[in-house]
Image (cartoon, rainbow, N blue to C red; front, top):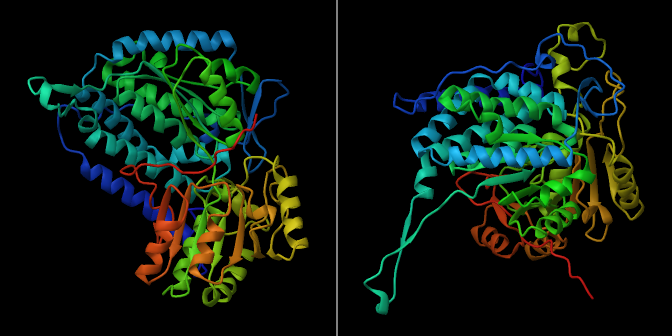
Length: 529
């Protein structure tokens, strides 16, 4: 829902949430500042003209990477993809810059991060606009998924980063009691990341925060889908480095690049890279890991999920749970690795939950949140008062999604809302999939096994707590899970037996906190000779 429009219906709470999130975020972080030698330095970064009110968009016929707004189809810009030579040059520049940066103190690095944090809080509207334009998400989704989490990651690193990287003493044995053991954490050099498009600001800045504070240079390969906003977001970091006195090598120390897939392998196998982070799908992860292995580059991968939310019979406030589930499924139009992809309900909760969800999902409004903010919005006939669900990044998956839904219906599932692509009357060039509710889904259906990454709510039956856990475990994914209920023994049973890296109890995705480790289990494939 668009945060700038106050809803009239009792269920339209997202706008209030967006306003509250922005206000609370600013108040909390600004109150946290105090005068010290590491105080944030003010700086400015010229926003892209596309973020300015009244911008209409243009058209281009170039064969370069074409960047456009998925919510409206507006052309944003064209970007020249990096060549192998460009990648070699980027790594060489980063290596030279890192030699200087690693000499900085933790205090000096904190000042840079504090400056970035201050800029983010003071310019969150522009950052949000860029993220919404490039990914099609709503203001609420950008507020929670881009601004708030990035600000918290910055603050945690500022407050706790030095402690995490201090030298550590380790015990010795009896024969070496006269010796002293110490572990020292040294910068790796040039660290790289290949990040996905669903959170263009957060996914780009996150690896950079850790890299800078630990004394490394960072090169981030961004998705072609969100290459336009990534240029602006990278300049935000350059601005902080320059303001704090490191302008001579700021643009070499932190870089973002975009390439076509056939060139990406040159980046992921580059011997000048010391570590690689990958965010994306498992099929692509296999290629990335194979490529990185050529240079023995350590790789950390964050892949997809088919997260289940288990609703127990004794859940106390089903309406509250229903709202949480709606947020978990439809956030970022379902394009969320830890989004809820399956809801498994026990008998006493199933029908009540279905009755609560059906009218609300049918009433969800898709569209462009930014279009409603334009001066001409009031003149458009049929424009909604607010937007609940944003656009999909592209229409590439729509054929597959429609086939999965049709296959499920043929096997007995009940389609109660949506189920197909949606041609928006105001934005016919945008990419929209209608918010979908599919009930009576069973584990054997392909849609129950496939990561949809779409605004699709799947509701499944389970006769018992043990059966619900079995259903939750019946996929090859194991990233996150949720359980809602009251009886402690049942909650503990689910937490202990569900096969996932993270579990939320009576909430959704609260494990995505910077204070906690993040990751999943399963997902391995057996290869037979």
